[in-house]
Length: 382
Ligand SMILES: Cc1cc2nc3c(=O)[nH]c(=O)nc-3n(C[C@H](O)[C@H](O)[C@H](O)COP(=O)(O)OP(=O)(O)OC[C@H]3O[C@@H](n4cnc5c(N)ncnc54)[C@H](O)[C@@H]3O)c2cc1C
Image 1: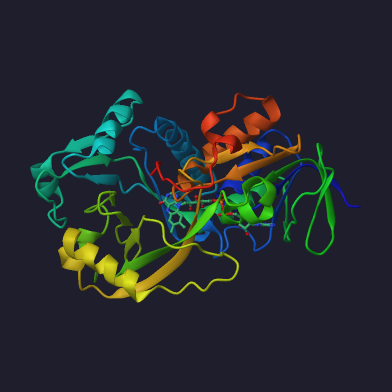
Image 2: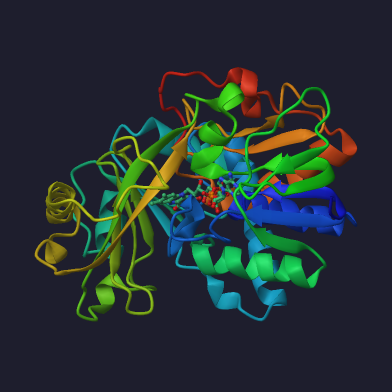
């Protein structure tokens, strides 16, 4: 039997890495365990870039978490001497005339003192002539928001955790066995790891690692991301174009940063996806669909060549609310996940919330409870 830790965090994606970071600040001895390594290409956190925005329609809880998280990210990047892991491109919500969620966002951003600009149809066209804006369309711009270099950010965070005294083990952890109080977890090689407390932050794997609790309640879905060539056209690079979201047509994207290409991704859920075994090749049907979208919104790019793609998975709860709660059968086992396609930006706030729950018995947010997680998908949070 090896060394005993205060807390073992299973999963070194964005939720596990930030949870470990906050535990270390609280003086804990922490072990991170991940079966593929931090933010690997199989993990939901393993993509190139992720959007951080504040607008969440009526779901103000996520606005506040994003507001808390952005300075935590930028402070961290400044401290490690890599501020370019965040790009302040601005984020532009392309709203339809009757877009209630965008209108609610304006009220929420105002209430929370978050800088924003409302651009009516003509202002939007004047400022961004490269975007096709239908009649009545308008925009909500957050100038201080932008993009995070996801995989590199999480890997840098794990390195920072190691410098602060954490340990990292590459191993697959099995489902916890026992009742009331868990003494140890087992890896697939049969090793037992003892700790006072355990966190399972296993992203799309949560339903299979904890089948009794979350089986059938985490829905991993296939998501395809495309990078189209802009041939260096400045109109599709920052600062001429911010990150944009079009919830009406179900797409969002990131302007061409560092020559990577113009990122276009469909936010609608794809089919069920197994993150261990499935191949990550893009499908011609989805490429064609993305081109149809480009023809409508960014017509200049409709024929642009596809440079590369990523296939990743969302790890959805039934409605998009996170699951951050104590395991119902163990008093010392906690769960963090259900990022549901929007969780990355919130990593710092998720870690802070979970650590306050675990170490200070801070009040629980009902929306994050296991009890509110149903087995039928009905997406509500975007
Ligand atoms: C295409 C795409 C675009 C997205 N865009 C955005 C965006 O723009 N903005 C945003 O905020 N969010 C976005 N998201 C969502 C966000 O990326 C995820 O919600 C977030 O990364 C989830 O992090 P996680 O730590 O919960 O899971 P993961 O990153 O998947 O980490 C889980 C880790 O657990 C490990 N693990 C699993 N099982 C075991 C086990 N048994 N033993 C040991 N280790 C184990 C895995 O190897 C993995 O590293 C997007 C997601 C995708 C897929």
